[in-house]
Image 1: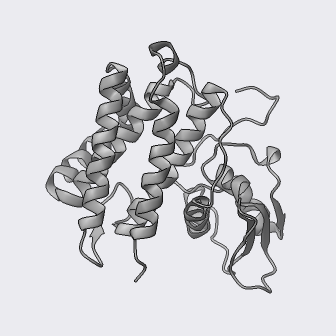
Image 2: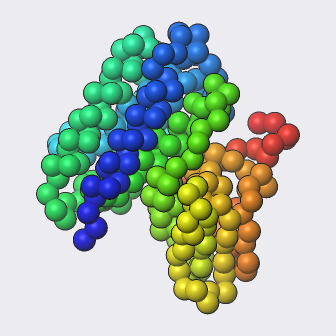
Length: 264
């Protein structure tokens, strides 16, 4: 069984990097619009704080988390936006403090989780490592939105390997959520890490292949960039179709981002 410590450590590092980006923002900057329609920087951090809180409940209090799931089922199209809206209405210093406290509580809960534990979620149950990976993916993706709003270019790190692995593992989910038949054959995926290392998945002789920069793959599967703006290449019809529908997050298909120059 995989040791979850490395991904928990990387989740902490990813959160701290985003924290440094927002810690000294003015109230006006917290209100800046991000690429997510209707969401300011405050909404982005509020969403992370809200999801961290839900994650803590999933790990430590299943009954309380079940009540959260009931709320989500009662308002399936609104509960995520409602959570972000509520948090975004707080004063920035309070929102920042809540986010910090929540992610610290989640880290403690994940590190204390017994080996082999599985936790309920809005989708399938998750292991400790899977929960930490999902939180890292969201922290990175929403951090990209914050950076875009501030006009900041972030330096990618090899922490992306966790998001890459999640993106590869969710291939079948992406096909299924779009109502498409799941390919029988495993794809070959070859991606170049920020460090220059080559990350590979699937059989070397696979007919269906995806290649390119790991950063671009992460932008694709988190739907932070349009495929046409990325240097990813697909060989084979199923691999090509995957790059049009890939998503590493749970829930219905996302709207994605428009191609550069096309507008929202």
